[in-house]
Image 1 (cartoon, chains in turn green, blue):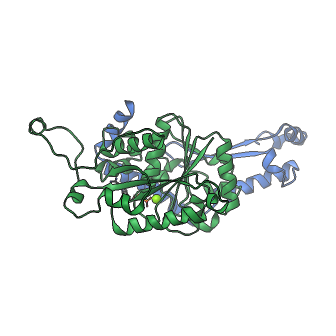
Image 2 (image 1 turned 60 degrees about the vertical axis):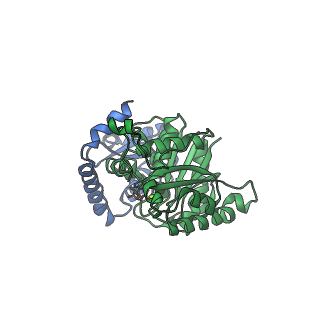
Image 3 (image 1 turned 180 degrees about the vertical axis):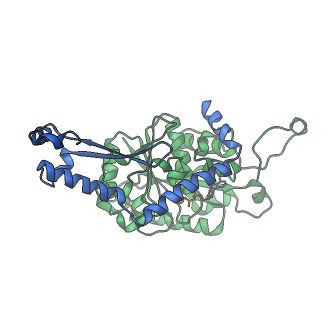
Length: 276
Length: 102
Ligand SMILES: Nc1ncnc2c1ncn2[C@@H]1O[C@H](COP(=O)(O)OP(=O)(O)O)[C@@H](O)[C@H]1O
Ligand SMILES: [Mg+2]
């Protein structure tokens, strides 16, 4: 049975699209049939991050408005058999989506045998963001170690608990997961950045993973290859760990402490990802 | 893993790759801005022309005739793929000459 996952945050620019692409890729790498849906109507970017921007013909709005069918709009990833992208429209606005239309698209995706339907939410708490989260079974709340991001995440948790379909129909609540991104252990150590433990305490939802601030993310976006493919990088590994936890496995946290190298390691200049 | 190799090749100067990709996508979007829903408008018009010539009622056209628009490869090439239903084909043929190109 397909699960609908919203990747959300309230605040913009915290890493929702990066995470949607990376987690979707990770799930597909594990063999799950996965589609990543861009709900950021008017500001589509998932296509760029996933490297399929030149293959977009139809988009989510076309399917919602029945101007194209789902198969025409779905873009199959060139690298992974089980990975698909449903791009957002670049020319319309968020009001082009309506809840019945989105419901139909989600049902069609479920009927198309996807295991995971990942909804990349736009920023804000208005219509676009509500559409993205409304049908969710699980929510990945993307948070940066920074005051406004944490507050906005808390706000979004309130909305998940009151304005989603599961909330309105008094079903079992959405399963919430905290994903801390752009984490910089050295800044935390210096006392310049909120620590993981602070964020966990404030938001009080289970931790899915911590993605370090990483050059690999920038390079991945530049190239249109989700960072999960870069399995040598810190961020790529952190996203794969998060995918494992999402699937119910116990995986120890990595990249949350500054690297204290032993004398031996220093001598051999241990080749590891740089700490920002 | 081969994915790692794929990544390594592009790692050399990813900023240059980024610029190239953006130039293509932005220029494409700018030309489309004046005609926001060019493709859907075109599709609807093509469908209505087919409907007109084949005598298919407008509300039935979607299920009887398929128009696929595709963009492929390095260039912005649009490919129209029109499949005529059996019955329509028979209807067109008696008019002799015009039938072939459909
Ligand atoms: N772990 C990370 N390390 C470094 N930069 C990151 C990381 N995660 C995201 N970014 C950068 O942050 C910016 C916003 O990311 P994006 O995924 O577009 O956020 P959102 O979808 O929430 O608006 C992008 O420039 C992206 O490259
Ligand atoms: Mg985004």
